[in-house]
Image (tube, rainbow, N blue to C red; front, side):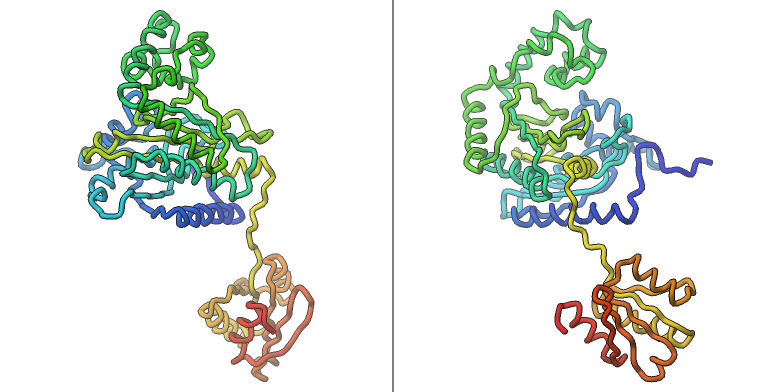
Length: 426
């Protein structure tokens, strides 16, 4: 019997989960400042959603999805990414009809892809993402990019590189598509089997192939920037102007295409340039998807978003030596001596917790000396000592573990007194 966690998954234990909680609170705070609201969607969806929303020619749909039949013989897939689910919810719940537009949403949660597990790339991973729908203003593209950069910067990362590109509108992409077919057709038999199929269905995906990236034809492939029409070129220029006005540095990469079929116009990735981060440098990526809402049954609605891997974010923090300011101290620890004192400690612990005090006590029948050691390990600010004598006198001993000072206080004044101490008042 295999009782280990499945390959490509991990247990997040105390000591690590606090880091996750810290970064989660950071991005929620930043989203609040940008006026993005949280949305929560199901972990599994009908398979057709991702086939249509993500694209049949993507590696995700072709190779990586966890798909199964439920008891109703329906094809169900564990979500491999978040955008398709958010857009499905946007359409199904008619959010496009609400008066406050654009709709600005954020989400977080586990995603599932059957990939070869490696550092920073798991089969179950946690993704944080943002979607802004119902605006075709280039300024919101810049806003989304600035939010993505802000998450990393506010957590203390500095070795960052923002790469942007334009995939153009439908006309630009069609012209570029035809140019790519003409360029790669003479080399078709030299490409991997996947790219041979992609060349017919979605030649832009050939540029994103990991197997053929060193093929000489990749270096000379026509750039989408050469085929942008006037409107697409003007849109991209305006996005760059907004980034310049915000002082956000970027690099234009004509080969950046992203891995999903629904992107058009703005595409971007944020990378780590930290020494020792690893071969896969991408931290997050996103872009505009003006046709996705219609593809999923909604009205014509523009959209843009991004997603980041929390695992890779934490890797980047470690690579740059960023220590998160996580509070690990316990407010107070109860040391009780004797049966009667232990019973009273149970009651007082409950009362303190109701009053908002973080408190713990021994539940293993340890001797007083061992209880004090436990308080030290938990970095308790104060230790409350209650024995039979103190109980008879309706007193409790309170010790400040930083200064070593001790005082006796009345049991019925304990809650108020400790609250004042923790607020900094004596």
